[in-house]
Image (tube, rainbow, N blue to C red; front, side):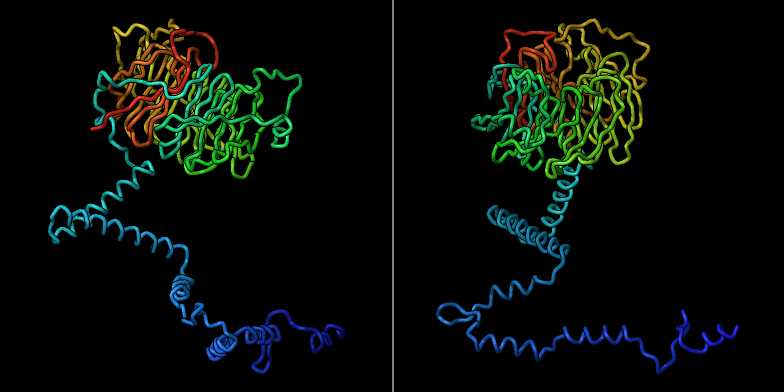
Length: 504
């Protein structure tokens, strides 16, 4: 007890408690001194400027005149935040658009009282464009598509030695990319048709880029490409095929950048997420993987299919739409590592694409085109016999109950397989292709699909791509189907075909 009392009286410090008025904390005293050392007064700044002027650094030109304009501009925007900078640039762009509209009205002899109407119309047009670009509202293009003239038709833009299996367009619709079964990857100009080939590097370079060489290797078919995709910024190109790798190319230099190993079977489909460098890949190993082309890294993988994955599509969200030979369509939610399963009535799904975040389109091996929705596990609308060899007797079924009580005829040839479906991004215009000699245009309405026009094209249509403006359609056509030789149309020409679309 004596030891404890002595300890409490002096020597040791007490935890907590209040300090007296005369007590000072040395920590805050040192902090105050440090702050005084780095603080400056206005007089000090003026003395520094005066010293610089005495040394000759007056900020003037060769004639001794002061140039203060650039310095003032830099000082004016030096302290603005990122949000303030975005606001300033947006206001400058808005003022330029207003000035352009004002000049147009002056040329047409308009009145000055129309300024308020111009501002209101400008606001509506900008808001509508932003909502269309983000996919919040759907562009109405299908109603503007006019019936093709007799002179209109598909024309071969780029030729390949073997069947074209995949095509893609850049976001500005100026460049195109195609891959064929002979292993060639071609970059071409839409307007002129000028082509540039991507040259495969040596095995040593591929190995240094991450490729795992398997021995023994059949070099004749090791570089056969079956899938292709381009990023929305037009910087990266992804290809995949029987070598089980996802290859990344630099579009600007057409050089090989990276090879992603990981799939245990053929890479069958690829797609970039819009606005990012993330590439989604599907394979015959029933696995869907996500990669980052810019960081050269693996991101995630998702399972769920019980059969080979045949097609994939991705929009802005981290959700992938896949179909496979197990008669299912899956929505993969990558961040949650979960999935939603949609089961086809009685056929294998061959192709798929997003119409919007909540609606999807699929093509089956019995010539059926179906419209699906987020809130229903069965198709919202089924268009039967859309690509049968016999064009007469086409029937449709708009039953919301999927028409499961009706028998579906699966006894059909490979020419009726809907190998490809595509939609004009953010619009109600869609297309489907098979081997029956036609590409069909569809108008996607609320819970229904309406036929528009038939575009004649000989051969198996293995891939389709709409221009973002909706002014033309690209088709990858060949004598054989994408993944095999179940059918052959010897009269077809292997290549990339383009068809103009007339919009009212």
